[in-house]
Image (cartoon, rainbow over all chains, first blue to last red):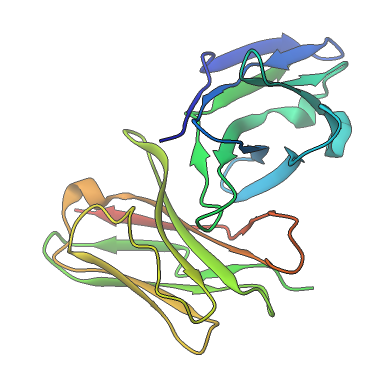
Length: 114
Length: 116
């Protein structure tokens, strides 16, 4: 069975500062990895995904993530955050086969302050 | 184009009543998923439909939960004899796979269910 751990439930950061949101996963097979963002009272929006190939993945809104197989991690980064990045961020994993159903982490609330 | 839509956006029901939640996926998407987001359990998979195949019901928490997908499009999630622990936001997602193979799931805005 697969699982996802997001150790940080909340991350406060000042505007224009860099940020890293951590994600570790566990799976016995090869996985696909995703980061989703959820703004207040909205559904989930895909930020970026890793399926195969280059381990550095770039997504929307200036976010990027790096897949590290040896450390089973997929941390999300942004070099300079904006107030509008305040939201909850979910890391998710799927094993591709079996319908690609997603297993989510518990989420990290990113709060950007002036 | 139109995204995934869900109705109602909010539903308040009394304990013991049945409820139906509706999901309209993106046109042409063959895969449809239901997830539940609650304070205690986070985001969890409930059920998955792919084309005409038998649905994957492995995430349904009890036999009070059921879902159907008519004509390969609209889906309805039914919860019978609702309990307070069923209070959550129910999210629907759809995906085009194959042949797209992007593996991206597009989520609707959710239905917030409150059981009193």
